[in-house]
Image (cartoon, rainbow, N blue to C red; front, side, top):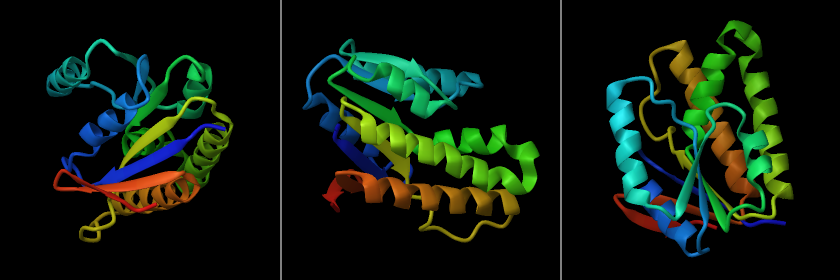
Length: 177
């Protein structure tokens, strides 16, 4: 069974840089599973800068929706796989299921259960990066509150099942588990 590492923190806290450092300790080749979708020029530029920063030792796999299946396909091909990030994946699922109305949470939780099951069977170590979204104000609209609730529940479930858990605050990683 593989080792799962869960890293959380606020936006721009340094969690991705820390996750990349942790992944490099496993050696090359490394898999970088990107859940973001470059839907505009600014995001295209962010993706370009991130790829340059990571360097040639990383192979990027873009998967905004089918995270569990993509991880299973990549198992055994890399020394470690970094998933950046869980919250973007959850956001992508939320929009995918937006027509399902009251079934959104149930469908996202089914995808989360598939992810946890896949992680339990992995040979390759997996590092999950996720934003901590519950430390701010209560959102003023239904969709934002639903996202906050889903992300909070997902973070709790993934942290509980992970072998190691870290929070990154102002660039400083703190080991929680």
